[in-house]
Amino acid sequence: MELSFERIEVLLLIAAVVAMVARKFRVPYTVGLTIAGIALAISPLRLKIELTKELIFTAFLPPLIFEAAIHLKWKELKQDGAVILTLATVGVVMACGVTAAGLYYFAGWPWAAAVPLGLLISATDPVSVIATFKEAGVTGRLKLLVEAESLLNDGTVAVLYGVALALFAGGEVSATGVIADFFLIVVGGIVCGAAVGGVILLLAGRTEDHLIELTFSTVAAYGSFYLAEHFHVSGVLATLTAGVLIGNTGYMGAFSDRGREALVSFWDYAGFVVNSLIFLLIGMRLVFQHVASVLVIASFVVVLVLIGRAVAVYASCALFARSARCVSPQHQHILVWGGLRGALALALALGLPKTTPLHDTVVSVAFAVVAFSVIVQGLTMPPFLRRMRALPAPLAAEGNQP
Image 1: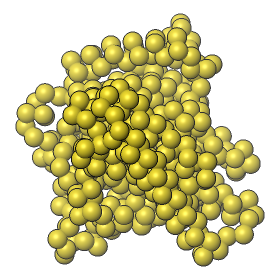
Image 2: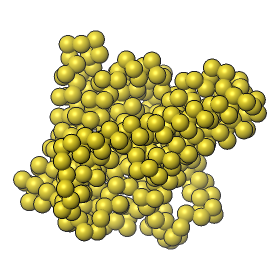
Image 3: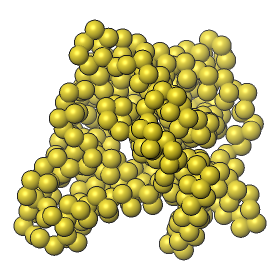
Image 4: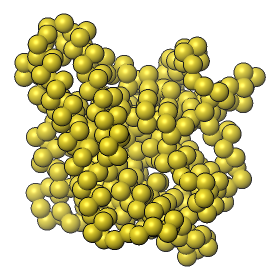
């Protein structure tokens, strides 16, 4: 069943009601939406809207990444760049290694199934992470570390995922080729984003109409992503680059005063709408994914993923323990438990070749891990953040806001 305008209206109405209820009972909004999606799928309405890789990549990811990127400050990114890059590269490799090795040695899975699952589930998801931490009211350096890592590790996963699939399909893979592909995907994505963002800034500087400026920003969000994907480089990094460029330089005369105010409000609303649709559809898809049939192995994978995340965070941060960019133990604990999985992992799972060993099991396990991440980790994040004293007292008292 396609996601038509009529169904979008129904889903948005449900999302608005869920937002009100979630705020009243202080339940994370993303959790409420996922549960509402499950309820909707088993209701007499029997809606079955397909959550596909194409829908996630072409419609949902660009606005969410752009909305987060325009708030990232270049000065802060530069200061913590080494920590973020280490988490997004070395950390991803370590997390994948733990999960894949655990499945191979203890569950008897072939490497051709264990490695792809380990990769697609090892990267933290920008959709889930940004939504959850934004709701909780996290600010400062912790917010930067969590969000920036989730946005940057896409490049690492994209390269290694492609290499793994080629390797297990019998293709030739070399260390030089892997490094070259990594730089091509990363640098190519950044170049595409910078090119589109630069053109948009030049055009926006020639108008004072805030509606035209908003239109230009929409073109930047989607145009950078599609251009990068067309050249088979990182769309996530392209949109991230365009967003950071516009967010950091667009306020220096390119956008009018009214345009700057409208930009923030418009993309906040766009993020709310897209998040609403994503988590409702995730909940609905869970009902039809036969997750219950893989409950035992999925529970084992959840444990492996959490162990892998802990190894990745603590080992990566240990490299900076004696430097000025040292990450506090409290922040490290939050990075471990806050490494949420979501739509990005599902998109990669849904795009897995049918010839992959244990294909259906891999996809169902990926959905189960995402369900645990969104519901269990999502529900426990606000109290965990308060226990780690990562929330200001007023925000903690107000509860979660959509």
